[in-house]
Image (tube, rainbow, N blue to C red):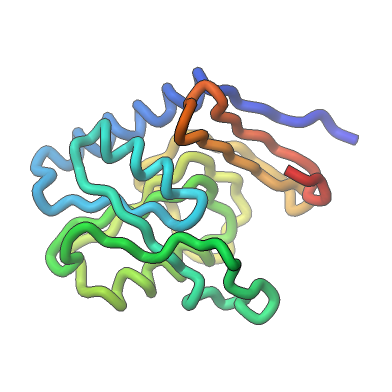
Amino acid sequence: MTATKTIGPVEIRAAITRLADAISTRHADRTRLLLLGIANGGVELARRLARQVGARAGTIDISFHRDDIGRHPIPKEFAPTQIPADVHGATVILVDDVLFSGRTVKAALDEIFDHGRPTKVELAVLVDRGGRRLPLAPDYLGFTLPATDREKVVVTLDAANSRRDLIRVLPATSKT
């Protein structure tokens, strides 16, 4: 059994600040900037980034756009899509905690375009674990943390207490 890889709250806070700084540098005018967290993992990250950047945050629910819905039905507890402004003509930054195959991002793009046509869509990710199956790459990245198909990257961003934030790489059969 391999040792669990862990990243703690200090490193996570620094990575989120780097992400926010990079977004702020690229988007001086934030009037049409929307940060949309992919439910459920990207929601808290989008909120934190939006606070630091001075932009609006919302939520994208990809449940109805998943290509594996037959194997993974829509969960009973989900965060519905809530977009704080019209996406038509806006710059949208999709935000997620972990980037793996790219299928989640593809589903999020489908959901966004159901709501309108943004001028531009970018991607901000806290952890890129590798293993892409679609030609997608983040515009903003906190950590590169390679993980095998037999490992699971678990990100915990505690909305009430950021000192409990944690990123772990665990064997895929482990309970979180």
